[in-house]
Image (cartoon, rainbow, N blue to C red):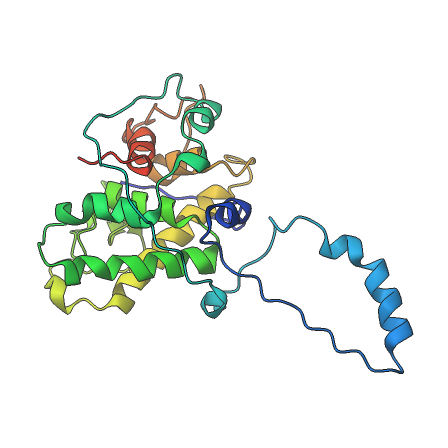
Length: 264
């Protein structure tokens, strides 16, 4: 059950671009008039370095979904596996070495691997997950593969998953089991709209983005540290992400496995 910390910033944009389904940054069209050409040319020369700078700090607008590129199809997905790997020692650098972003499956392949584990055989219902994931990814800058893996780790993609109530009375809701997020508990999945699914996905993704940018607990904006924070709210003093610190010890490594084709 996730416990959250909150803040803002994205570190996934460059990785998205390399993998072919990044948010698209709108182009800038400059129209020159004859009277302004000398001034504008000078301004362009002075600002060239700015436009050439890395775009990893690009801030996503909450209404930027219209600027998202249409994603390329996944192509042929590798066969899913029941063999679960471990990452030892469980430090962030170990995960980054063992499970680099370049090795993550396409989000559609993660969905394919889990589509029959969602509690329904109706693919019309299961398909409601896809677009909300890509939409939330575009609007927040969080990698869609990571969002998809978290969903299946938290709820197996069951749209009407029950809430989890903590001893302190707080509630983790929805398909990303995140506090203060919408819950479709008890609903007939066929009546849950794609927009309602998006509400659950966007809320959980915002929580995860906060964990990515926690200034004290995750100053390097590491996704594996963020996963530990998403699940337990803290990292063990040892830095071992396999230490649940009172929560689910295998949480981070199981999300890593889902990113590589494992299902349970």
